[in-house]
Image 1 (cartoon, rainbow over the protein chains, first blue to last red):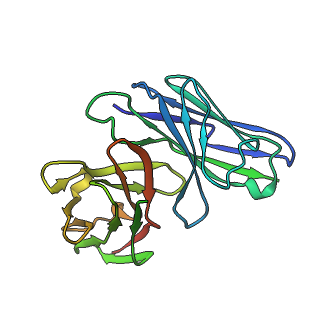
Image 2 (image 1 turned 30 degrees about the horizontal axis):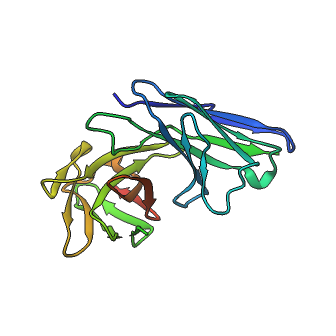
Length: 118
Length: 113
């Protein structure tokens, strides 16, 4: 149980285009999901907290117009990197927190998306 | 604010030897503590967690960790390293009602045959 699917696993795009990344909780409902960014050989940096039915909460220094988050249902959150540039190239990871049950204090992570902007 | 300290970015251990990864946290409220493992180009997998109750926690793949409040520590151990244990390990802290996870910088574990 507690599986989080993230798609795509890898994407290569041209500078100036937009890229959408999906994060799905497959066997549980998650009102709250999280988006992280990880630079090579570094830890995870929380970008934003995604809340179903309301606006995402962005961390300081993260451009909300650059990284659009939509949490349209209790099992799906999307991150759209708009007008991507090479400096946006990174590993993006989502996580989801179950709404109920013994696992509700745990974040379960997707497999990540490697974004390369040319 | 909560924070986690993991010293020693790279840890080398011989196959069959003890694995010890240190984690110290800072939290103004009772913490929830986690160890996650990450294999190359993959997301994070939960190894074990401490929320309440027994302070010695057993996880997957033979790992365990002990919550020591007086030392603000949550060190991860495994009695005998296996080649498949080579990965990045992250310690993280949150608290009741706080969704946010604060991660340590991670330990890259290398297992030497």
